[in-house]
Image 1: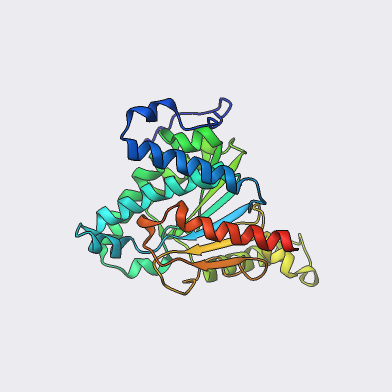
Image 2: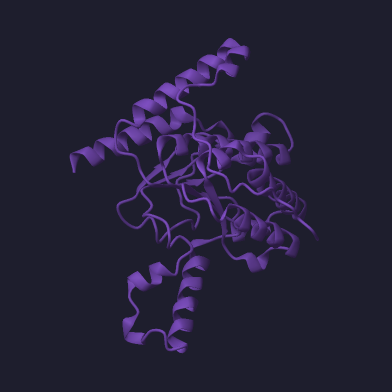
Length: 279
């Protein structure tokens, strides 16, 4: 199977300082919304900005049911929302965004839905690398983290191409957790540490929490500062349990992921800034 991605080795394009003039030719509502979003981002940038934010992108299926469309359409809208949210985060100056795209537990869903999700994932990974203005503009390195052994060979090929195509992007990181659970990540870290001990690279007595943390999928990322879950569910569903253990603000938002907007982010980030300024 041959997969070709365009190479983007040139200097990443920086975002313009104001909504592009082309937006003037869209509807007045769309233009006003873009200007308002820009202004809100500029206001938030005046305060401290978290360097690592995580999202549990929950509610795609229920949103599809809400608007009376097929489940696949709900997942498609969820992927579109991911790029929009990533754009907002990067404009704010956030360096790492980690999203829960597919849990290992999701393999228990109907086979047809799982297959549709995998096909959509392939298409969106290629789109992110070949056609995403956000990835190019902000120099985003795209990483798919999780237990890749559970994925098909063709999807693993696309993941490897994704990593290769964006490996020289150093401005920001998008971690797509698929297929993932925190328990599996911690088990993987333990196996990595045990292997180093067996190879004589470390001693058993050297094993500490820091060494385990250094072997997590997110080891090269700054500490997680905000974790947001949509859909109104108040649980973490085995996502970033280690990373969210301290100094991490966990917020549950009562809207489905495709409905999530900057208006939902605004109070969360304002509270984060207030808390930081008190310290």
